Length: 580
Image 1 (cartoon, rainbow, N blue to C red):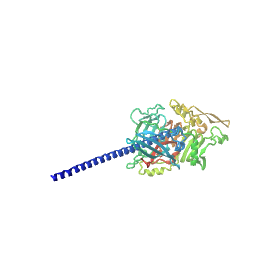
Image 2 (cartoon, one colour):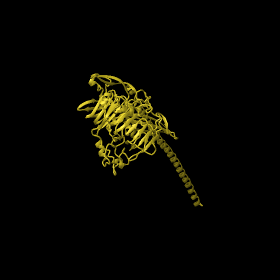
Image 3 (cartoon, rainbow, N blue to C red):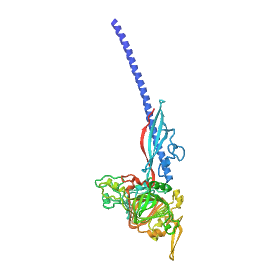
């Protein structure tokens, strides 16, 4: 009996102790679960904060970029992003219109987020102009636990300007595009900021793009007249042409490497695209500064013809000694002595040009550029096909000649004083063929109103020179000028004009490219708002791949052509210390 009582007394404490242990485990587990749950909740809050901060940064970058693009579009004289960011940069982005608003105390993804601009740093040197903007986004999130979590993300974003994408095409028109006829060939892509009409006779060794344009009422359609599809060549047929001025292929040979922006043997029709903004040439004072800073010159026969900027007497000054209607106009005839260009130069009014060109540079004209004969490079680029060493070819072509012709008015081809020129061209340079369009305000000085009615055959409000000879006596006078005419007068054009069978240049202007050519090659790029080129027999356009925005052949020096804002690039990203 005694033994039995001792056993009962031992079991009861054991049971109680076991129950205490179980309770301790339960309490511990409850505490662990509660703590883990709180920690998980805090972790989720921190994660949500991070997503909120990143979302705010993404939105802010888009907002700044959109505002910057609008500013560049409305201010065509802008050539560096610093002109916007230095004015509306670190101290005042978000302050007032047209400054981009900063996100402040905005609820995003369950967090309250604010963004600030920390620093704005500009590029230096002559490479692509850019600014680095440091943005910081701080997000605060309060979860179910009542604990407030904070995350701060910092990113450096590059906002830059680069050569406009309109130069990625052999043919770019800011209106409706027509590319028809068995004599027409494009060795490169073509694009219109409107509908495109093709046929099965033209040869398109590249792609076609048409844009939806509400301003023109264009649906962005591509139509092949008569049905069927456009003609294009296989790579082997393209190689066998023996055309050394057309772009390389991709692959560059039968066993060669893929080459960005090279012709791949296909011709796609890409309808319903977005409009690619064609920037205006704005106030030339900006380009005068560039020309002066870069030391741009034109030399001929051992003499400096232009040192940065030309605003001297026109060709009539040599005969009369009087500054007259053609003042600020320049005639460049490289028939017997090459025109040597180095960098950007500005000519106040018209440029009349023909002959051989050496060097690399751009001529900006304050009014029209008249090409009155063949215009050829002394040392042109060469792309042999097929090519087993394309990188070496690209390197060699970097130093070859390249000329840009950029006019605030028009680029006119041929002798516009001839009756054949008028009968061929005039019906295509006025309504209804040409639609009205808005003009840059700086073009008012050469007769263009805020909205131009499209009639290039009308008087522009200016005067051009006239020369009359009677009884061996020469009299100089003036008469009203038309938009397509030169201020230098008919006699100068007639004395220089010859058949045009080749133009080596990048052609760009604010208004129209028009005129007559023979059996002609244009080696470079043709970019305009309106186009009216009448050719005889054939017209071949060979796109200069050195203009490509995305290619191993792209030449960095050629930033002097009109610029556009490019897509922002993330330079760096980090989460700032001190997250709670």
